[in-house]
Amino acid sequence: MSNTLITTLIQIQKTSDLKPWTEQQWIDYLALTTTKLYLDNQDDPHAYLIVQEILPEIEIIELVVDTTFQQKGIGFDLLHKLFEHAQKNKIHSIFLEVSTHNQKAINLYKKSNFVQINTRPNYYLEKSGIKADAYVLVWYNKNLDKSAQN
Ligand SMILES: CC(C)(COP(=O)(O)OP(=O)(O)OC[C@H]1O[C@@H](n2cnc3c(N)ncnc32)[C@H](O)[C@@H]1OP(=O)(O)O)[C@@H](O)C(=O)NCCC(=O)NCCS
Image: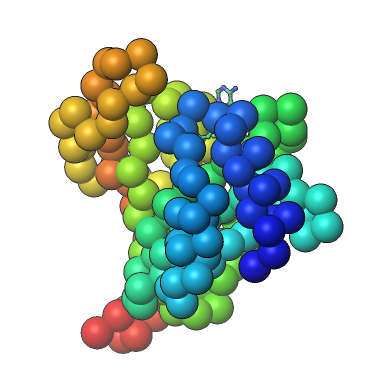
């Protein structure tokens, strides 16, 4: 993983309200064999989706679209790249946590067929110092043959 890419990922993350990772955290995270990184554009990325794949499940760690490039369908397209991968690789489900205050992301995930299965109270500490609950959302691979799930 090149330093240039990590610098770009850090810049994209900084445009969001999410807790920033250090360069070393990015290096360590990307070195894990279970980590998968999706970019909107390999040459000049403006958005990333980072996941942990521990078969037969995937956990979404972060999805960030640079603020300048939001509301152009990029977040939706990145999730669809992940769904295609899940369908090809017999992934059963994709999980994530999202702040109950993050309406943009909740709308995106609901539009992408995630369903709420749980709520984690006081899961996030926001920059303002306010605590926010997290929804646990899941996307089920409906194309998976029932017999393959056993
Ligand atoms: C959430 C986020 C990834 C959406 O990315 P995006 O590329 O702007 O989203 P898209 O253009 O693909 O929009 C898809 C859907 O998301 C929802 N959405 C996106 N922007 C929205 C906004 N400003 N207000 C309300 N809903 C919004 C809508 O449901 C939209 O569908 P629609 O266009 O049919 O209404 C982006 O806002 C972001 O990076 N936010 C900061 C980081 C973050 O909070 N990530 C999620 C937690 S890990």
